[in-house]
Image (cartoon, rainbow, N blue to C red; front, side, top):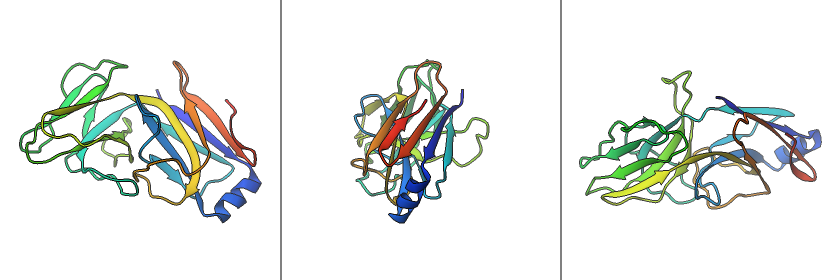
Length: 205
């Protein structure tokens, strides 16, 4: 099921925000996160009506340990993974294919078996209609994993919106740089509309 977020911006605020050099940012949460930690999508050429669409289909990679302000960069190949599945980085630093049956609503796991390299888990969103296309930007990076450490990750269909000074997508963030709106997609919900006015954010639908 595709999920859609429409972001409407008042005309005066388009002028004001662009005059300040602000981008529109979107981040995505995983279970246990109080705040998102990676800029998933961004837009500097925003207009009155802006539409974002995605599907809950994922991929994962081993990544370098990064600090706020640095771009997430995969150190292994990026492999498909689904709810309930497990994947390993083996003793030679090669990421395996995912195993175990798909179990919707359950976390997926990444284990690091490499004795020489610590990895963080970077999670990506995938377009299943075009699996050969370039992956979208990562939306989450875990803490670094030493040998035989495992991380459980359960992506949530919850996104966060805000405006802020220009940063590239895939940038690790420590905090949001402006007022936020959190949009939760409940069971059976596939579309929401948010609006930004001089008064701030409003969830319209």
